[in-house]
Length: 218
Image 1 (cartoon, rainbow, N blue to C red):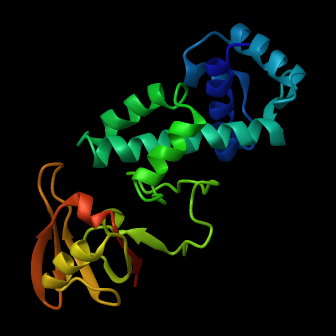
Image 2 (image 1 turned 90 degrees about the vertical axis):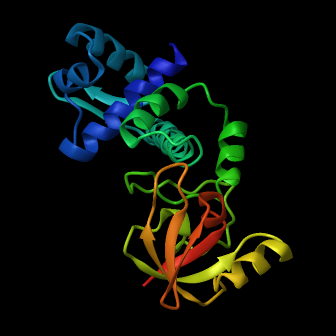
């Protein structure tokens, strides 16, 4: 079986079972834009391969093997969305479409590199969680997120600043320090800086800088 096609089916079944408990043949066909007979044939193969449990006229559910693969693909998709929006400045809807193309060919090694580059983001641009993986720091406080991911008008406390002495000194000159309360006033577009309010003063910082500032929302 084609690996990319298998992943597409498993990801679709994951989505449908979260919504309807079981993935019906007709629903899978609708989502993937293929005929019901083609879906039935593929489901039988996935069942034989141990990816799903399939019953004719009932539908399909994922096995542990299939679910692990589906969530792995979903993680890659959400990481790619985060990268395309934050680093390339794409609109969320367009980034979603492009991520659908990138989630399959990207290798596990590249996935880990992207994740590290972005300081192990916890949410995609739509606010959906990005699952934890081995590349992520096991000691990371899961309640912390990069300032770049904080929702507009939300208040948070700065818990950690990643970077060297010069970087931290630049931020300190702006009043941005660990344990300081910060409010994200505006996200801006890709080329525009993020506007934050610290100690009743507003300042602008680049998105690349905001990604290195880890905060905990109040």
